[in-house]
Image 1: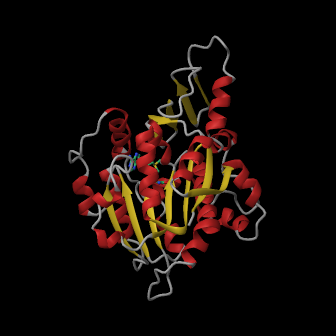
Image 2: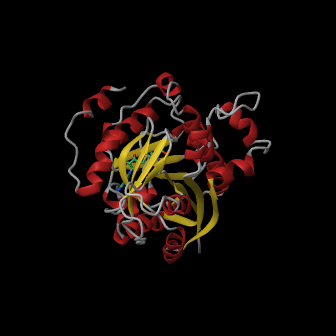
Length: 328
Ligand code: SAM
């Protein structure tokens, strides 16, 4: 870790209220571990699979938008990317492989942002320009964190990986999030992401025994606990999420897909892709590009043996991947 990243750990962070404080506290407190320790994770297979899904999404939907960008670099690199909820910068190498020109990473968790910046600083030959900021992207406009000249050229791609669902606490937050996406994305630009699979989660809730008091389900890898069995609000439909070696009982919100699609349309964003993670696997496992990538990313070994056990495979399908295009 850089001394800058060391310095920020333990420093009191900005205060947030309610569930947001729990979410920020959780992500700020999660230690950044090195590559070696990451390989020791008990859910390394699932983490590798999630990374593979993100790589597929980026290659299929971000690459064409980046290639068509007006933002060209001197080394043939092209395109401007906003990573909203960038966390510790886990996708930086994916964007380096996509040969982008410029990257902006924002996240509400300040400690994570410091780690992401440090990760970029230590990327070999700094393959793209990057800026980072701590920002509540569901409460504040992006323009509060960056000077206008940095936002004059719109983004070609906006990515929200495993984080958009936190915006669905209220309709105001979801709208602020969509405004932050739509306002700074160029027409023809791509908005891609990964979110929990609402249908899956609600189906599992519905199949609990009728008199069950504990509204939770899962396995030794993940656990989801609802507070109420019958109410299905469009916003603020809260559950608590545990994922082994990753997320410790953090409050999250259901994203009802049709509601999201309808709202996104109001912001000029139209769906081009939506698939469950199992479906992404089935669709791409035999692909000449993404099949071998699975071996390189250690999702499967060279004999095609999966690095995930049954429980990790089940946990993988609590997510869906999506891509939307900005119209106009
Ligand atoms: N995108 C990263 C990845 O795929 O590795 C990190 C995903 S992590 C599961 C979820 C991230 O969402 C956390 O870093 C968290 O701080 C961020 N987040 C939650 N609420 C946010 C908000 N209101 N504004 C910005 N980021 C937020």
